[in-house]
Structure formats: structure tokens, C-alpha cells
Amino acid sequence: MTSATHLVQALEEIIEDGVVQLPYTKGGDIYVNHSMVQKSRRGYVVFDTKLKKKLCETFSKTAAVAVAKLNTHSFDNRNIKDVLNIDNQICKWYMDCIFFRNSIETTEDDFRKDVLQTRYDIAYEKFYRLKQDLESYLYDK
Image: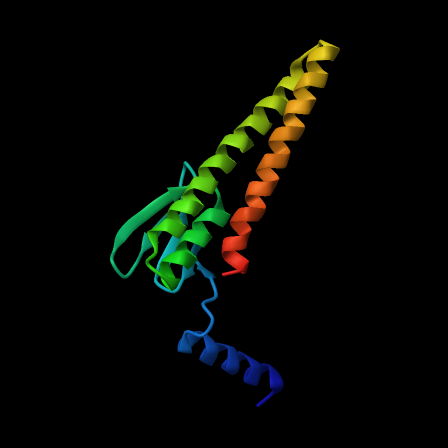
């Protein structure tokens, strides 16, 4: 056998043993062990396929995958609630960024543009920091 097939077999054995739980996509859905993330009209929905129930709805895909990962590693609902809280804040600051950007583009007043630009910069900074906090649930734990 070639080295590529050996590598593929080694990865399959690692995944089957449960040492590393890698997310994979299948038909547009994201699976992490026994959790499934599906896109919806309002964002993303996380399902537990083992219990056959809906866990939550999220605004961002990152939050949905983080919830799916936390669901497979532990049943600590505090961590999942923390992720959902961060996701709600991300949604708020993202919507503020959209509002401020649209207002900057449509206003004629230079003073108002400067104020809106400052507010946009603040909202974007908070959005970006929250997104980094959310990614720490994916990569650090």
C-alpha cells in the first residue's frame, strides 16, 4: 500500500477510537460525533442525534459547532449557556455594525458620519473580541 492509504487508515482508526472528534460535513450538515448542525432561516440549529432532540438555535456557525463539540465532550450545561450568551452578544454587535455601516453610507452630514464611524469601530471591535472568545471554545478545550 502507498503511504497515503496508510495515512488514511491511521486517521480512520483515530476517529473510530474517539481520541479526536473531528467535525465532518455530509449533505450540507456538520456532524460532530452524535451532534448535527443544520443551517436554518434564522441561523443554525444544533441537534443531538443520539437523543433525537433539538439542543438550541444559534446565530453563528462557530457557536453551533462549539455547542456540538461541548455536547459530545461533556454534559456541562454551563459551558453551553456561556457559548449561547456569547453568540447572543455577537448577534447584537453584528447587527449594530450593519446598522452603523448603512447609516454612514446614507447620511450627508459630515459630523454625523464621524460619530457613526466611531460607533461602528467600537461595535466591530466588540464583535471581533467576542468572536475570538467563541473560537477559544473550539480550539482550546
